[in-house]
Length: 304
Image (cartoon, rainbow, N blue to C red):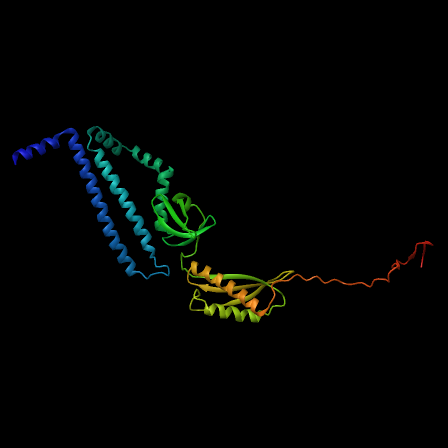
C-alpha cells in the first residue's frame, strides 16, 4: 500500500503529469457543474411555467430568460475553469495576477465589448431580458416569415415557413425592425381582398362568407365574418373579407379556405368575375355610293 501511495505521489509531483491530472480534474468539475446547472434550470423552468398562465402558443415569457441565463452560466463556468487551468502555471499566474490587479483591465474589457463577438453576446443577453422576440414567436424578418427557434449568446435562429434557417447575429437582430405577430397575443385577422363585377350582389356574398367561416375548422369560436365594399375602380368593386384565427398558420389556412370556397360559390351561381365592357355608339351610315355631306360644296367652294 505504501508503495502504491509513493508511486501516486511521484506521479503527482511530476511536472507534466501533475498538470495533466489537474487539467482533467478541472474539466470534469466544470462538466459536472454544467450538468447540475442544467438540472436546476430545467426544474426552475418547469416550476415557473406551471405557475404562470400559459399563452396561446404555449411558451411562457420566462422560459426565454431562463434558457439564456443557463447559457450564460455555462460560459462563466467554462471561463473560470480556463482561468483556473492557466493559474496552474507559475509564469502565467504572475502575469494574470498583475493584470487583474491593474486598473487597465477595465479598459481591456471595454475594448473587447466594442468588438463584434462580445457585442453579440451583450445583445443576446439584452434580447433575452427585454424580449422583443421570444422562443416560438412568429416573426417577419427581412421579408421572411417564420418562428424564432433558438436564441443563443451569439445569434438568433429563425425557422422560415419553408423550413429554412435564418442565422441572425444578435447585434443585428437587436438593431433591426422585426414584425412580431405573437408578442402580446397570437390571434390574427384573416384579410381577403376580392375584386368582383358591379353586377354582383354584395348581400349574397356576405351570406356565402358567413357560411364558409362558420364551417371552417381554422376560425375561432367567435366566427367573425365581415364583408365590406372598400373601393370602386373603373373595372370592379373591391370587397374586403375579414375573419379571425388563433395563430398565424391557421390564419393563412383560413384565408386560403375563404378564397377556394368563395370562387366555387361564384362558379356555381354563374356570377361573373370582373368584366370589361365597351359601349360602342353606332352612327348612321349613308347609302352605298354616296358621300356624307360635310356642309360644303367642294365644287363651287361655297357654303351650302
